[in-house]
Image (cartoon, rainbow, N blue to C red; front, side):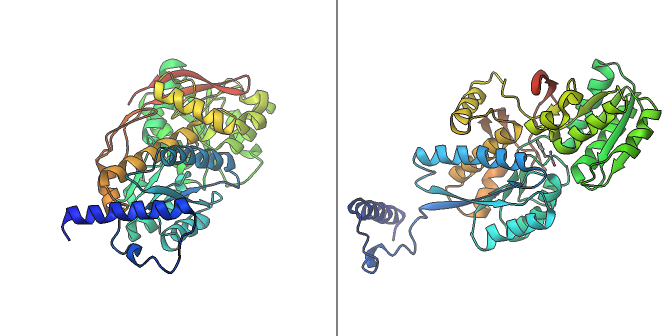
Length: 391
Ligand code: PHE
């Protein structure tokens, strides 16, 4: 058949399907003419992986909501080149082996063409080798550890990376706060927290600052007394806490209770309303780097915020924004690939040049976008925009 005839046949098939659906009596065994062996697919399967339960549950819920919001909007507008999006959502619980299982299931059982996920760098590092070896492109909305996309050419991310985020914090401490004596306290069992702690230490030292304590703790501990006693003894001006919201809230409380008065700084892992619930008054005045603020004045961002509020109630955090953005990148790649074929989607994704809710996105040679950071300050139990920092 010529290309034109194939197209005509496909169009006829679509009309036939629509008629069958319209009369509501799809004859299951008599659709010989419609047996669509060579027809264009009518759906594209997309996986979403996020920690929907567990210690980072607010991350997972925001991520799922952000991605789903965009995919629903695309379907409501007719899908992608006639294909409807079908999502498959897996909960990695913030654990590496659950993450690996989630990636395998989406690829082997659900036959997804592409995956949005996952959130935590250490879990993405468990999923990425599976996606890479099976040839399924993945885009992590939020995993900032540099090693994630280095796993291979099928692995992308929608966020800046920790070498930049650590530099933003070191510069803020030294240039803006004029504070040259810092301590660091981080989770030793997490690639993200450890990597960000090391970048901050190195950049702060290079800029003439002094790291007076570099302490770590084991994942899951609720008691930071031993480390905080050491930190108090060296009297830092800044305490850098590159950890997720649960730990950061507890550390802030225990530190203030003990009389530590240092300025708290941190990274994107603080981004959760639960931080303010757990940290209370102790975390007030803390400053952290992040990817997005709902106070953004970009028209596309404002539309996203109002759509999100209309659907879910609360304002979107950076995780919701980046998941929405990752979903935009995926849909744009499928559209330009003109296919649901994973290899074609990967190739299209590599040449992304797209206006998103944080601005224009292109990828560098290791599939990282170049993006600005925002600095937010905790005020009255919320994160308030302070300033933006470009790379
Ligand atoms: N950057 C974190 C990581 O790599 C995840 C994260 C991103 C958490 C954004 C909160 C907000 O593990």
